[in-house]
Image (cartoon, rainbow, N blue to C red; front, side):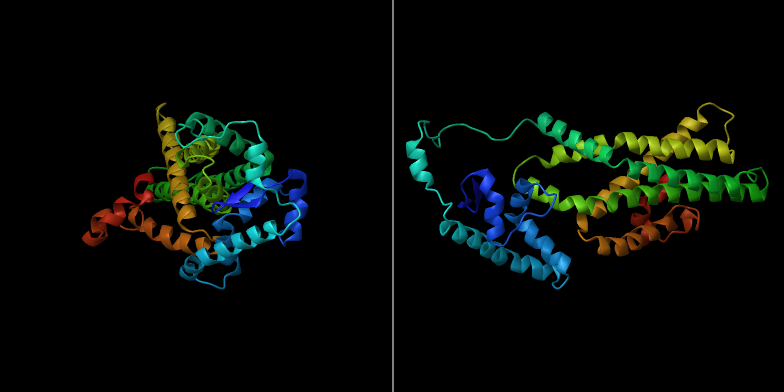
Amino acid sequence: MLLAMGKILYFNECSKSVRYFSSIGFPNPALSNPCDYFMSIMSKESIEIEDEMDGLMSPEEIAEALPAKYKKRIDHFVDSYESSELRNDPVKMIKDCSAEPVSKDDNLSNRTHWCYEFGLLAKRNLLNQARLPSILFVKMFVLLVMGCICIAIYGEGLDGSKEGVQNRNGALFFLCVNGGMTALSNVSMVFPSERPVFLRESNNGMYRVSSYFWAKILSEMPSNIILPFIQAVITFYGIGFNNSDWWNFPIYFLCFVLTYNAFGGFGYILGTAIARKDVLNVMMPVIVVPTMLFAGFFVNQDNVPWFLKPVEYISIFKYAY
């Protein structure tokens, strides 16, 4: 049984559903799960995404026209089902059923435990990562290439001279920017594609937002530690930073991990706030690049005007560099 807005859209055998929806103008896409597709076309988000992809309406116009379009689609489903040969009478079937009806006084809950939701979502996210190992290999290859470039440029120039100090500051700032922008692009360009699925499933009450958030963060934590570790090892020993004391590398690695994950979190904010990838591609440099000025590399932080001080303290580059 498929329901929306308190109305029955389909109530019959599962094996007949795909052909039925195809007959009313909603064919199931190839290599797509019919259940996921049915849930998609029954939700408001599918109409919103279609309008955004068309690019013919502004976000305000889409939001204004969405309720009427959604009601029209649901009415189409209801009318098609009512006039279909597959229509069943649920009242008659309930009367013929031997089970006792559920009363309003029954204290029932269809929500599963938080830990169960977290486990399923974390498993799904890990499986998605395992199905696409090439993405991890590409990220590692990029880190290796950037590390080799840093070694080639800065590997022989970190002495105590004036030029050596300049090279050291330049190397640290470049690694800070490279690590941050890599994490930012990895997250902000992936989450918008997952956003429609998350909105549909969350609005349908399939899981809590908190369980989805922590499952995604913790399931991606291993890669968010391994990738900074690889680049930290290559750059720290390849460039020749100070390794006279044993704790210098752990501190350097910890800063690298914190920088990578801080920019990853900022990428989630951008990916959540901006649904369209093309708009995100334009807005990301506009939002992120100006904050580089507050890192202390281009200008002394004592010279920052007082009215820009709040921006300085929310700049991740300030703390990373």
